[in-house]
Image (cartoon, rainbow, N blue to C red; front, top):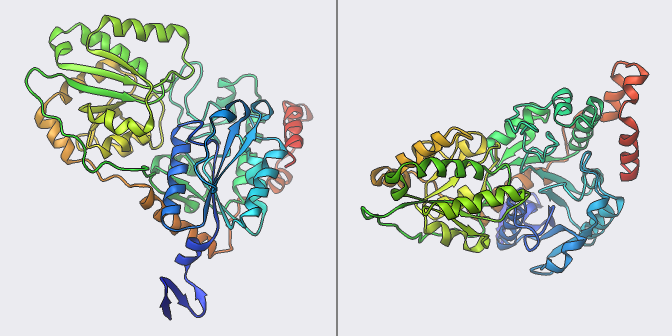
Amino acid sequence: MDQRAGVLMVAGRKSRRSMALEAPIAIISHSHPSVSKGGAEIAAYTLFKGLVSLGTNAIFVGACPSDSRSRLDLGSQREHAIIYEPSGYDHFYHLALPRLWQELGAILQTHNVELVNFHHYLHFGINSLRRIARDQAMKVVVTFHEFLAICHHHGQMVTRPGQLLCKAASPASCTSCFPAHSPQQFKLRRELFLDTFGIVGGFVSPSRFLADRYAAWGLPRERLTVIENGLTQTAPDAPQRTHLAADRWVFGYFGQITPFKGVDTLLQAAEIIARSPDLAARIAIRIHGNFVGQPEEFIARLTAAVERHPFLTYAGPYENALAGDLMGECDYVVVPSRWWENSPVVIQEAFAVRRPVVCSGIGGMAEKVTDGVSGLHYRIGDPDDLVRVLTRAADGALFTKLQAGLPEVADGQRMAEAYLGLFDRLLSDTAIAEIRPLEAEAANAPRRPARTRLAGKRDADSALQRAQL
């Protein structure tokens, strides 16, 4: 064994560590951060930049809708985008037109890519994932950012129209949320995902909670690895806030204003605070973000509440690069989501500027924020309990204790190092523990009456043929 120029040689072969450092790697995202700034695309891009900083031969490929082409701003020759037409995508089975996997395959072939890390199959389709995974020359890793394979409701695991938390999917329960689709269609959807995932080398989840849900759904637990998302940059010199007796305690919300993010709970809490002049004088709530999918009546409701209550402010959209500065002007960051969440980047951003978090005590939020140590939990969707927790948080001694309990936050380079460990193992191991193929499962399944088997099958066959699976 000898070591030259940082490359470990064992019996004339490169070490496992050097395989991932030298192998061409592709990070695939359903968007590019210049077009969309959601958590999944930012995490994928952060990993890509981290890999580049470590000296790897990495490229980034994002999907871009045709009507957003003018906003696309690729940062280097290592970055690529594939333009797609949203109307050509099947959101139920998650199938894209064959052109998408053909163009993606051409990019991967041009760069002699040996390992592909999909951070989403959205827009590219699982047919693209399937085609790439079938290529014996490439290893494939899928990183999950939500429950999209399990749940047709935007991967949120929230029922509709009731908006209640869903703990497990089944053809019957999914049909109650989406009566336009039959139980047979939901069964086929699940089988299609599991069959495709069966030829994938490994899976990454940024939280144990998400990994456990996918294991319960059907993925082999031994092929799931938990790797925390990193931040593009951390803020070691976070601003300090010194409170005077007359100062308000500032609680900031940051993120997209969507039906799942719990801003309505914040507005309900504001009405309760307004009924207590003493509390209204001690607490300030600032809402930062842009409206996504909200009806006009909700926007009007928020605007009216801001006009009515001096302690409530809508600060508008913000650039991700400024999130740390804006959070530094707050005492706490509030994450009131009404869905399970996975690993909200806003929590890591808050920790990076040394701000404790008040959050719903469920899912990935409860995993990332330890109640009474790095933040405080309240009962999901309960404005009275939220006000109770905000009141408790407005205390100097507790704030100091929570700040002391905040964890360190990984940056993109540390995230990339963790991924490289997984990539090394996959590149050095040719065996894949496959889930039983769909064809074998279908052959062994008991015969059902023809009427049942045909229900909802025509559109499924059409979609699968169109995707050329």
